[in-house]
Length: 442
Image (tube, rainbow, N blue to C red; front, side, top):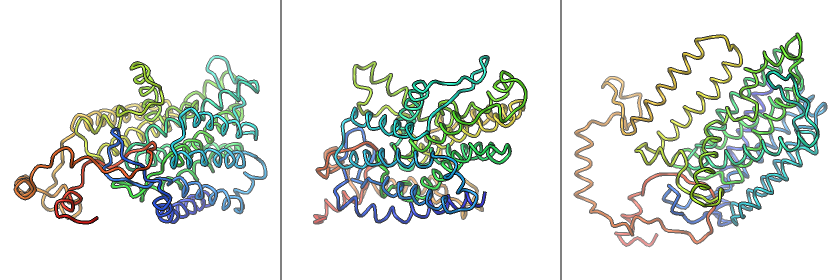
């Protein structure tokens, strides 16, 4: 565990330290696209954050290769090299898309090629545990097609959910944490060495997200862009493929093959086509495809109908919308993890039901701002300390000082560079309007 934590910390540190220089490079390179109608941020923000995340991935793999207990992952398996090859290809495609906005079909082809590169180097699904049928061995073509489909689905699910500050990196970090706990349990408790690569991938993925998240929280100073969202989606899919399709269920439990699969069904719930650990992004992906196809549009046509857009429309603030998405991701991922450990416990089901009810309550109270007692105001954020009288006074003062601004002044100024996927930050910033009124040259 110490070596996994060391790898995680090194990955996070490299990603965090490189994000600042990468931001400056993105500004110089002009990777600051114009703001589109579907975006919710109001200022041009540099992208290419995936550059720092990719070098964090490389640093994590390099450190792990020189550690005593993790070195065996590289000597006994070719999966880390397969991951690095596929990640490098998908990262290059993402960087080009962040700068020049590549066509969606070209990106889809690049995703399939990256998945094919990993399959050629051994990172593929060999068998699946199916209830009632036992462990089913897949042919080479079946394993290849299933692996490519899993990679493409996961990449696009993460890419679709990358629409608010810190949303994609936080949700993937939560999924990676649950995935790490499960993979480490398989590797350490059962002594299954085939689960070591997936455990390493999950630790590195957490480090990539944690290192980038401080720069990407609201208000974001830099976006990960497609170079980051597609990269972390591929790493998440690689870990799921490694442990789902290559760890033999017969090695975990005794008994017949049919009994083994029956016992393993709860355990494999978070991993079969990892739609439970990324259930929220996957649901957003499916809904987006259905919505756009129903309207006669391309499934890749961008719009403002994603789940995070809906949360903003019903009245949630930017930060609260992100936290709600975090909550549901953690509930589904860790709920599935707890059920895989002890599927017979009713307390787990009861806890999931109670937390789900709490989540629904949060969804129905978009404008509710909790107030704390006077004695506790020193330890809570300032927005929870304000009284209604202070709010009313500040609102009346603002209305008296600043007259209403027409819609043309509220329209953000484009920077003249073609846009790419991603959106953050809600609300216009009044200080820029004040500078224009004062005749500032900026």
